[in-house]
Length: 280
Length: 267
Ligand SMILES: Nc1ncnc2c1ncn2[C@@H]1O[C@H](COP(=O)(O)OP(=O)(O)O)[C@@H](O)[C@H]1O
Ligand SMILES: [Mg+2]
Image (cartoon, rainbow over all chains, first blue to last red; front, side):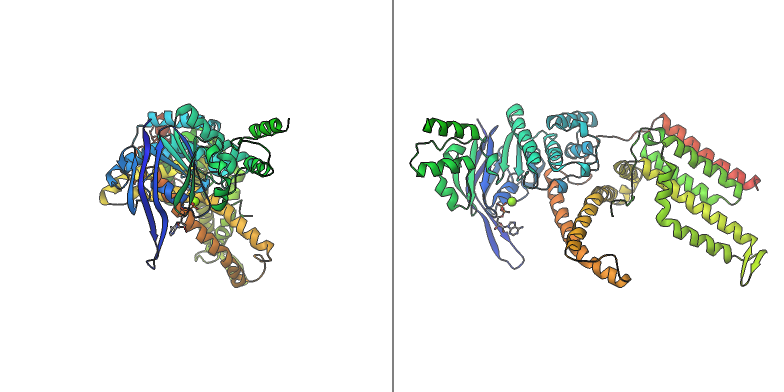
């Protein structure tokens, strides 16, 4: 399959008022395949948000290149095309909802693209149904729960028909119920509509179903593979200041005691089964 | 305690008044205000009152919400009426100690009372029956011609609608900060004006910092959704005039005509 995003030797430095540099990204090489579900993991300040903002041209590389569907993000003229290909959902749902009514907010993106009104209507209805928020179309956003607001934000992005959605810690401010709603919605969009998903998170439980897991530390990618491969390297993750899923933790400790267990059992069921087998 | 601010409140509905194009309602309110200020005979208030009463009845807005919306302005209305009552010179009708009430004073007070209350209730009817976004859309469309002389009409309308969108969010946040500070012993209720203002300072600083952060994030989110000003933008809900707008417009013209007529021939 083709790559929706290609990043070559990306370096990014923040420069503050006193001319002090912070190297936030330090040589990133990364391809993201169309249709895949990629999770990016890393401790605070490891450069995840900075990387995300490069994927739709909000930030431009200090060095290196970022190509979105073959388009260079440094080309101002391509900005609208890039942003309709890659949609972005942020952490705080309150700060990305523009309108007073749910459906008006979802319409905001398509309106900016200059699409005619009947087509916008169609897309808005479709997007709201896809995130299961259609019954709330004429509600005021500030009366919704966190998970619902975040789903409205996702609808606002998919109404623009992007090929890829980047979500920067979309569940960080939500309660467990809201978190489950949002993750379930994202996974459905990936499976059913084939939208590429780049999910940034630090909840281990959200990483298990990913096709691919990327671990970042200090502006670099330190690990990249399937969740099973990545979590098998428990010690390396700990060194990067990250914990591992509770299931992996349990298996890791049992292995240290000499019990024969595969580190690839990530879900609770798999884990329970392998432990059951080991002791049977 | 901050929850019951009724600034720009909207009561959703699907009545004749609700369905009117926001531009029609804006134009009607202008006609209504002109008519109100043209009144110079007491009987000429009658069509204005009837017009308001009909729109209240048709829109099913509760009279209670209309009156309670006026509460914060009640003091101003009464003071204006009293000043007019006592300080208008003319033919005296009552003399009490140092105050004299003149015939002209009574008239001026009644006029002022009616004028201000009808003005406020009329504008409330507009915001009660029109969604804020529609109102800003209507304004943008009506002021559209001013774009030719480089007025940032779209930007102003956008600012207004974002401000309206964030009012509840910021009120909620103020409440939260207030409670957090009350929990640590802050006192917002007692003391004089200066003391109260001082107590508000630790409230305003975090609120402003947070508002700036929100503004920054919102701008990024809007850019991510391809926003780049009003140029080339379309609307999902396009404004369009219908038969009901013609009827309502005609009613407003009748109102104006009646006021002028009663001004000339009434008492
Ligand atoms: N606007 C900014 N100005 C200066 N430095 C920044 C800015 N945003 C982030 N940084 C720095 O860049 C690094 C990476 O930050 P970020 O991408 O936000 O990490 P993450 O999202 O993984 O927590 C951090 O060291 C952070 O302090
Ligand atoms: Mg971040």
